[in-house]
Length: 114
Image 1: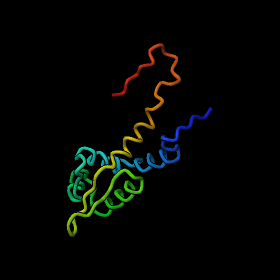
Image 2: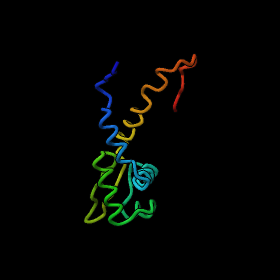
Image 3: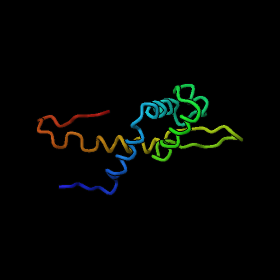
Image 4: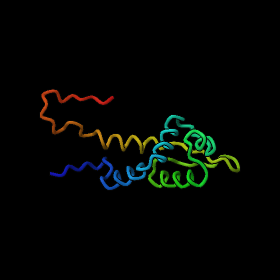
């Protein structure tokens, strides 16, 4: 039986978002941004920390932004800052863990995950 919850992200949307993370470089970029916190990083700092620079970084940021995982904001004339869309990342985590152990036959079903 298929379980549907209107507050859940769709399987299709989750798969699309995970596909955006299907690159070591994009995952590295996202992890650098998560480490930086809500203030994000300038593109230059992000490139330096992640080891991904230039047009390659621009390409990866575009894919991550399309997936709703990062936001880019122009500050001043030319400094573009990137920050993680924490809500989207949390939504993915919730999608994976929401029904954790629901079908387990183990007597101890309380498998806490943080």
